[in-house]
Length: 344
Ligand SMILES: NC(=O)c1ccc[n+]([C@@H]2O[C@H](COP(=O)([O-])OP(=O)(O)OC[C@H]3O[C@@H](n4cnc5c(N)ncnc54)[C@H](OP(=O)(O)O)[C@@H]3O)[C@@H](O)[C@H]2O)c1
Image (cartoon, rainbow, N blue to C red; front, top):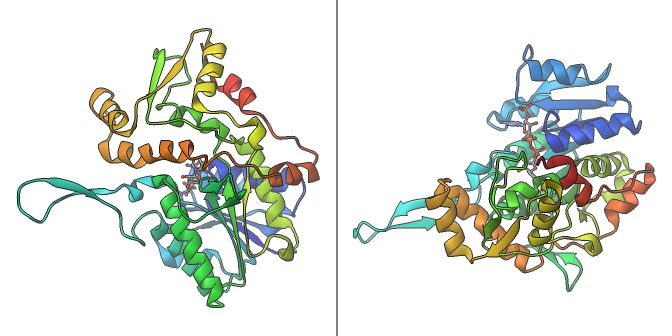
């Protein structure tokens, strides 16, 4: 039986994948290595170790290449769940050269955004002799006309993923990795508050109208389902998903835009909530000046809405349904997720 290591095993996606591997008996616990940046003796380490008898827990930090290399020793397949440190991606406001005191935003250079963390893990995997990497990318950059993924996106959140995908493809082409699987994981159904103007689902948010830079359909996908489908991919024969890039996402026919999500939220709270599309400049001004959010973070996030308008997240792919079907599970709809999360 192959040994599978999971980065981010204590997090939402890595944790859902770990749970699914165990709950559906896809692989013995003794063949799983849960990676964590925490150290032995910490509560995270202990919680992971208590998940199942025989499961190994190893320390590996994106900030420490040697720790990843050690942790990946003897591993056959490595599930690289992307780093959560999104602040690495934010463009920088720098002084313009002509000395008139103006500042301008410059894009984070390739290798310095979140892809820096991913390269640490990938390079360590190559050094440790891991031949198969499965990378959790994100379900933007879908081309609804071609019904396929593309390698460009309007969304800043996708930039580090595209750069990491390209890095992995390069190492595979150079023969340094045998098998690369890229999963463009569906947008979490649970992450609708972030898209809906950082809406607070706990009842504290009294906005009746949410200002947004744009709107478009999203094939929202529950984290539980992403974990199950990712677990099925990780334990399939290596020929089935090796050297492929694909989406795990609910179907386009059930996709919902943010105005529809606002409607579901309003229905669940018994108080109407709507959406007003104001364009990118006003969106950035409003969330920075009126709601006090960090300018770099808002700017980075605002491109997301242009991507939604272009249909980048209206994914029409049956892979998720098919993989869930193999273990007898049906996808959870975003309606159920919103109802579960919203409090009046
Ligand atoms: N598909 C989507 O819609 C969607 C939504 C949100 C986020 N994402 C992306 O998916 C990825 C995983 O998200 P998530 O929701 O599972 O995040 P999460 O719940 O915040 O988990 C992040 C994981 O990263 C680990 N981690 C933190 N710092 C680390 C470091 N320096 N070195 C190694 N590991 C480290 C944490 O584990 P330890 O503390 O144990 O190290 C934790 O398990 C992130 O890239 C996130 O941006 C996707």
